[in-house]
Length: 185
Image 1 (cartoon, helix red, strand yellow):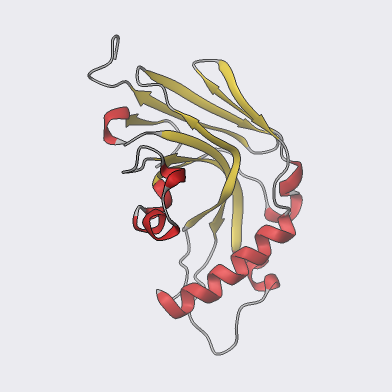
Image 2: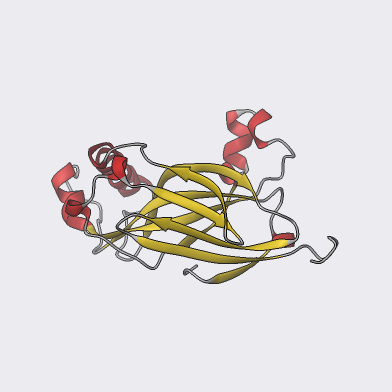
C-alpha cells in the first residue's frame, strides 16, 4: 500500500504497527551462475523510504508461540504501507536515521539506531541469493522492509491517523478506521 492508505482496524487481528526503513529495487535480480555480492545489491536499490509494517496475528500473544507457529502465522505480518519520501542508498546511514511515530498528532514512539547500512546490505545480499533458489529471484519494484526501528505499538481500536516522520526520508501516513464495535468507531 502507498502512504495515505486507509486500513480497517477490524480487518487485522490484534493489530500493531512498526516503523521501518524499506528499500525499493530498481531492477530484477534473477538466478545466475554466480552468487550476488554486496556491490550487486547496492546497485540494485532504487531508493530507501520509510514504511509501516502492520502486524496482525491469530494468536492473542504472538510472542508466546513457537518459531514454527510464528512462521505459519507469517511472522504476524499483515501488510506494508510504503512512505512518500526517498533517499539514495549511498547517501544514508541506516543506523543514524531518527524517526518518530504519532497517533493523531501525539508522539507514541521514537527511535534512532538499529542495523547499519552495511548490515542491511549484507542481509539483502543473502535474501537475493536465497530468493534465486526459492522463487526465481527478486523483481524490480519490490519493496523489502528491513526490520522494526520503532518496535510494535498496539493500534487503537477507535482508529487513528498514523504519521511517521523519518529524518532525510520524509514521512509515511495511514488512516486506521476504528472498530465497528468500539465506542466512537
